[in-house]
Amino acid sequence: MRLSRFFMPIMKESPAEAQIVSHKLMLRTGMIRQSAAGIYTWLPLGFRVLQKVSQIVREEQNRAGAIELLMPTLQQADLWRESGRYDDYGLEMLRIKDRHERDLLYGPTNEELITDVFRTFVRSYKDLPKTLYHIQWKFRDEIRPRFGVMRGREFLMKDAYSFDVDEAGARASYNRMFIAYLNTFARMGLKAVPMKADTGPIGGDMSHEFIILADTGESQVFCDSALTDMGAPGLDVDFDADLQPLVDARTALYAATEEKHDPAAFAAQVPPERQLSARGIEVGHIFYFGEKYSAPMKAMITGSDGKERPAQMGSYGVGVSRLLGAIIEAHHDELGIKWPEAVAPFDVAIVNLRPGDSKVDAACEQAYAQLRAMGRDPLYDDTSERPGAKFATMEVIGIPFVLVIGPKGLEAGLVELRERATGAKHELSLEAALNRLAPTGPQVAA
Ligand SMILES: Nc1ncnc2c1ncn2[C@@H]1O[C@H](COP(=O)(O)OP(=O)(O)O)[C@@H](O)[C@H]1O
Ligand SMILES: [Mg+2]
View 1 (cartoon, helix red, strand yellow):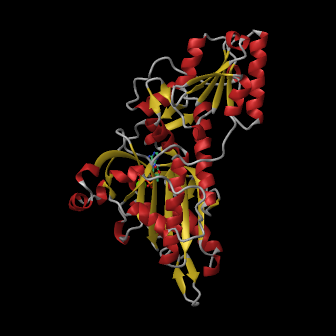
View 2: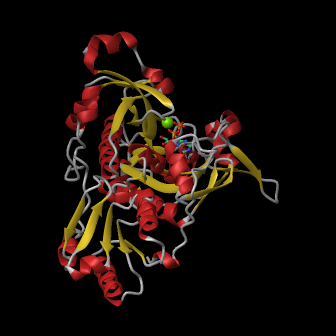
View 3: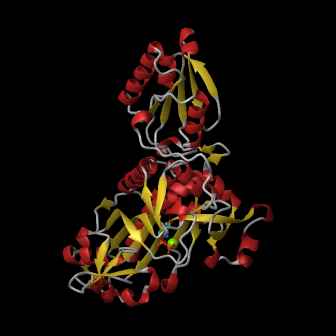
């Protein structure tokens, strides 16, 4: 993308209405614009990051064997009457009437809809297990939308739903999502800690929230600090194998959200120097709920014994739009955002220090063409802004690598490569710089 043709409305001042750094930076860099309370337009820069985050979520869902579909945002109230949730859900549900006076709602979640799809097409244990997911907008009429995309009213969620014939199968499906989530967040440069969460009436141990530790988090959490040093399982995990040992290794140490916190157990199980009590951002939530929807909605499976029983279900959410806020909370400095490469709106920038100088223009054009040919996503600043302002822009929007090309350097056969994460600057030939910028495949942070 040539900056002269792009649409990137950056603000000079930090907006006063934002309370936390990620919200400030998203407004200031022109990633989002509030349209109504908790409802945002995704401007081009923000939309690019949203797409990159969505794509990582999608790739890791697919790797774990989940299958993508797309359900609508508007749903019929009648389905929710079957599960009993139409009346229970309360004021967070946005209720709508169509011209025929039929009750609709803007989906806050999709258990009912997916259960209806499933019961229509699947009858036999031979078709199981199945995990279906979509990445779709949700609406929850939050009483206090705040912190920008962190707690919106309209927000993008990945929600997956697993169907199994028995509890052992459901546990295997749960474990696949548990492992996929750790890899997903690690690919975005996030350390997510799985924490025991409330299971409601069903009880048991199959509910975890994935938490990013951050002072601005809305939840109070408690864990063994050793958990924060544990790496992700890795992209070479065999999802057909028994994943229980990998899950056990990550659930053996104490980690609980406020609702599940047990101060006596915390004190007994965690050495004092590792007792971490912190604020956290919930970026994902996985939950086994058995027959809660399949029984009332009659999503029945015939087992190998010929008997019918309700399918065993679980649901698995990722706050896709919230993740942008969480990533910025984890990766910024006083100059602005420091995007991890995998989610950066552009992964490299080219700064032309003297537009109009034919040698400099030619070198920039060559770099721009080559970077695109090698699969990079470059932003080429071809404008006549002064250099200081150009650098400040690339810093605030957080581009991981900046290639600086000017007349003096070219005279000596050199360009400068700047790394946003470390602040390092390297002088080298254009060819060497381009070699360094050869893309690597997907990676989980160490
Ligand atoms: N109002 C919201 N704004 C942005 N993201 C949200 C919001 N509510 C939930 N999410 C994201 O969606 C994920 C799944 O939602 P869920 O667990 O059903 O929500 P909750 O914990 O609020 O009941 C959460 O882990 C969170 O990351
Ligand atoms: Mg939750």
